[in-house]
Amino acid sequence: MTVLISGAGIGGLSLGLSLHQLGIPFHIYEAVDTLRPMGVGINLQPHAVRELFELGLEGRLDGIGLRTEEVAYFSVQGQPIWSEKRGMAAGYHWPQYSIHRGKLQMLLYEALRERAGDVITTGAAVLDWHETGGGISVDLGDRRTGAVQGHASGSVLVAADGINSTARARLYPDEGPASWGGTMMWRGTTKGPRFLTGRSVAMTGVKHRKFVAYPIADTPDGSLINWIADLAMPPGHNWRQQDWNRAGQLDDFLPEFADWHFDWLDIPAIIRGAGAVWEYPMVDREPLPRWSHGRVTLLGDAAHAMYPIGSNGASQSILDARFLARALRDLSITVDALERYEDERRDAMNALVLANRGDGPDKVLDIVAARAPHGFERIEDVMSRTEMATLADGYKSVAGFAPEALNARASLLA
Image 1 (cartoon, rainbow, N blue to C red):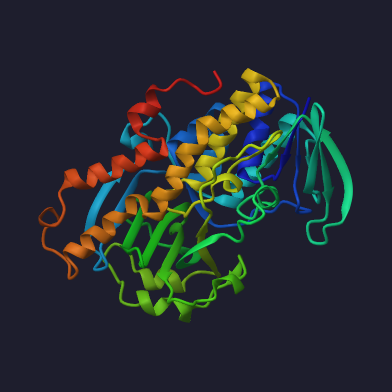
Image 2 (cartoon, rainbow, N blue to C red):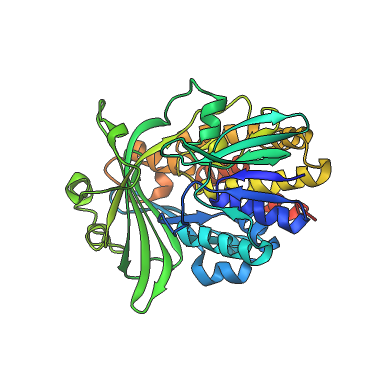
């Protein structure tokens, strides 16, 4: 009895580590020939960090990321709106990390190979499958040509193959491409000064013109700053012709941020200082009525791709992996286990996808801008601290990391 996993991203590798922890047989099939540390910065919330700590990865995480201390919101004029402590400074038993996505993936990959050995086959995309009595057989091959080059058999298939999931496309052939809400993102990293606490995530602007910045590493003279510039595009913008890793052009977005010189950070200078800039459409997928179909289920972005709001994409993939591992432990490698996992996760994740479409906790920026478009003298005259805290706490509850509840919850795999 073996769990077959399609995809060696953060979700698939976290599932592999969790199954190895429980002694459940598995094998991962990854479409690319060689895993490389791709991507830029992400944040891991305490509910996901808890699971990685319980996998024994605390020291490794500290080696590649920074423990986030604060999230802070600023108006278009650079005025402070709201800030709150994060991680252990906020009373959690676990930190939040600002970390490079690719380095996190490689950390998980290396830890899994050290612990479990040769359990990952690269250059082998899961192209198709069929159920065989008490199990499932998958066709493996080249995802570019579709040529079948081999087969594998197991008890269940977990598709952790990302936002453009082959498995999801087969289960929902009429769904079409990812959904674009009209925003393009430009992303980069820049060596710059330490700002605010030196461990802060800063959100500035409004939904249609926003700049996000946070350090992901210390440097001798300051920080390596990960940044994202969001701009709403006009109707008819042909985003589907954009490559997912297309090099961005400063002239396409820098003019919109050209006067954002603030005493706590010079945003135009940070943008200009990047070694490279990449352009991405901000996309998600519609919530699904089902993830599990017989002996196949979806995990991570394949199940619930969401806008990068509130720092929850990678975190929720890790949580999916832990909930699924628990179900497989409790109910064996069965259809019942897949259904229990879905019952525990699907509705909550569908709600989170929709919350992120509403801009999650970042909507505080738009509320303040609507009430005080030209700035303010006292933020308390525009929006009360109670209203801000209620908004922030409500999102934490939807996303599953309200501090009191998380601290009190029993370990998923105790």
